[in-house]
Length: 198
Image (cartoon, rainbow, N blue to C red):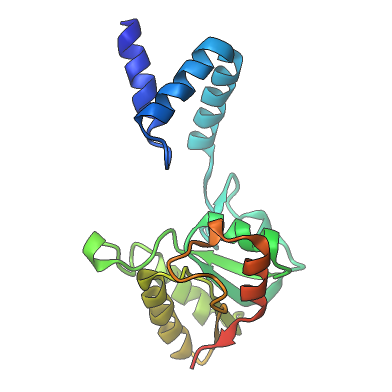
């Protein structure tokens, strides 16, 4: 029974990105040998997070509330909407730039081979936001991957069809790079140097 539980713990830790069998085993042994209280806190926080964190009904960012703190902030520029692939990209922009507009989180990128189309990215909700009349400028901040560029192009077309101003963040972000892993200076420069999409 004990070995079965240990194996299950190791396999459970492997769901985290970048954690292989050896890393998972080291983590499990560390918790069991030296930090059982920390392991119990981690387990409780994971349970609470999985049960209580959902998506903002406006921007799809992770939140415990119906509407996240950014969407609920009346001091933000409600005429600007920045489109990002993930909540971690949104957090990176919040930390590295002085952007004060709103966001929309896609939770992915267009990838027909993987079965990810417009419906999976919530583009119906995005179009509803375009149509409500508040948004004047759309900033495309998807990653500089082939899929990210295709997603930006598709969303740009949707926005231009509604006569919205469409901008793309500058390509100081390396091709193939992911926003959450780019240093703050590069990200800030790329965001400040965004260009209009023709």
